[in-house]
Length: 83
Image (tube, rainbow, N blue to C red):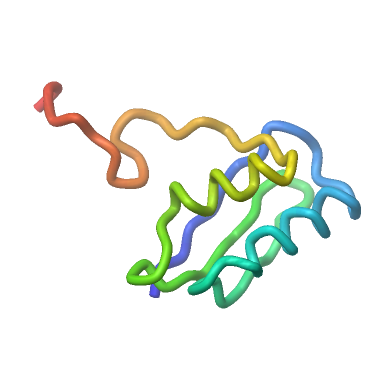
């Protein structure tokens, strides 16, 4: 089980929260979705054997929810050339 927090680019209102929750809960392996509305963040608990953070991000983007792009090396994404 893994837990990730994604930072949204826009403000999180009731409509966007419902869209985000629906998109994420439709993914196999997602067990819990919570929102930190004042911080515009989404916390997601998921089974990383069934899905990945990249799938979660893509699902949110397809639902019209803009997610802050991850920094180099975050979420295990690194090409290895800087080390």
